[in-house]
Image (cartoon, rainbow, N blue to C red; front, side, top):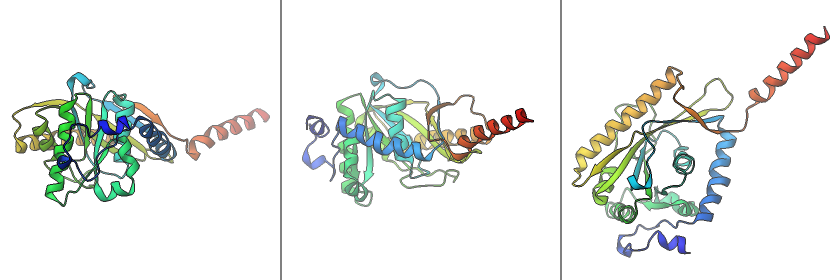
Length: 268
């Protein structure tokens, strides 16, 4: 319960969203290993990572990571980033649509809290809530999808809303980080996921919401475009395999077929 109360400590009730986060170390671990990692293992051949610039540390925080939103898998990839890339140096939080969070309330253990984008007052409460949590401690990170909805990866112009800038303005000082996500088949039975992390940039008070939103849009567009270009050029020299999934049929049977072929030649 101490972990749960820490997520709302010092936040007035009138400034809390309908469903606040209920951070819980055990619940977060169970959710990650039994839900996120298991699903990735069963679905993807590999998850690739490219880090541009330096990884942030808590002294640089609080941190706001803003990602493009091409797939249902994006929330899972945010969890992967928090645990496998940032190594849990930051306590992670993520906005989640209220109607979805009511169905999957256990996600609050991992830092999910509700937002109702169709109710301006409720949306403002969610922004005020996470802004105060980020102001309180530098070792906290918010994951946001500023496109607001699933959007085809290569649709341009990339449209983003002002949520990142509004949170940053209320926090006053933060490190922001663009993340590009992409999912593709590359000659294997199973798809591969690609994550391009960074480079980070800092914002300081006073923050102009319109200017910050424009910068977020430009940086996220540049990151998504760079990931697309690397994929098209089949240039993964600056990437590393972050996670491996369950081998597909091709990976299982190809070695067996080569062994069988070699055995057949020896018999002749």
